[in-house]
Image 1 (spheres, rainbow, N blue to C red):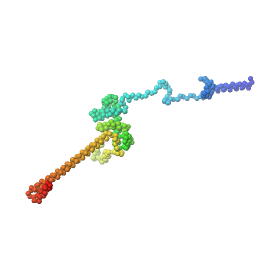
Image 2 (image 1 turned 45 degrees about the vertical axis):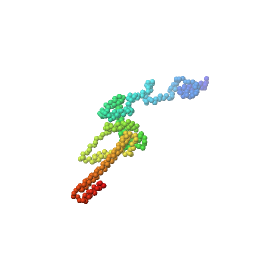
Image 3 (image 1 turned 60 degrees about the horizontal axis):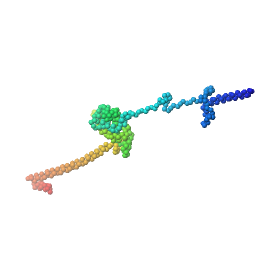
Image 4 (image 1 turned 90 degrees about the horizontal axis):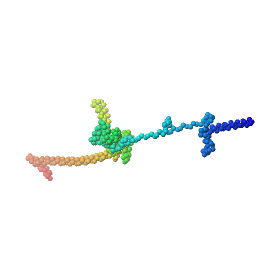
Length: 364
């Protein structure tokens, strides 16, 4: 073998070895399989071993990217781990709403009959109501406890009754403020719908900074239909309970130099104030009791007028009779005078003739 043939053999072996090592390096990457085995072409290239053993050169110069970390679930908080998440995880138990079932009248939603029973128990014009009201002024807790036992058979606690009555006082105060405002006008009274009128007046009251809380048209209608507003308002006890009292201002002494100024100030304070609103046209269903009262007042005034007219006619007849009696007395006096003139001896014939003529005129 000559030198040229030996050189070609060495070159061939070197080239073959280099190609072999490069082929092994390509087998390590996934791009090699994706390049050699496209979609639809199976079995064209033999599958590589499941766990190929990389070469020393590959381990030294490998640049394959590391797989990304697993994504954090959306329901996990930042910084939390997957530890303890297994079969032991269970959905959180929702809060039980059985508290409302423990008391049939619990919470703020009291049935109307139950509210009315307590209002009548405390404010009605009865001996029991007077007794309860006096006890409520000194010991309200005892009254609530008695109501819980007598009215509700222990189904409602004293604290719940106290909260219900407190809300009722707030509602009555709001309705009283609203009625004071609505009585001086305000709102759209051109509409025939009572609910629309109430909504318009409530809107006007809120716009004028009236403190009405959570008062609604349905609440106003409900209180008026059940007569609760009249029960709170007509009762003198309710007025003493809810109407604030103010002590009279001390009057200045006559010798004080500020007497005139204080008197003027007191006069200005006592001057009534009016809301600058258009004339109010009352609704047909806003105050049912007030409408009945006004109709009875109209009938009473009409009866008074008729009675006064009859009395005036009687007085006129009495006056006519008195005038006739006076005239009769005058005539009697003249007749007596004429008789005396005729009986007198010293009267001349002319005087007696005048007396006779007067008497003749009476009989003619």
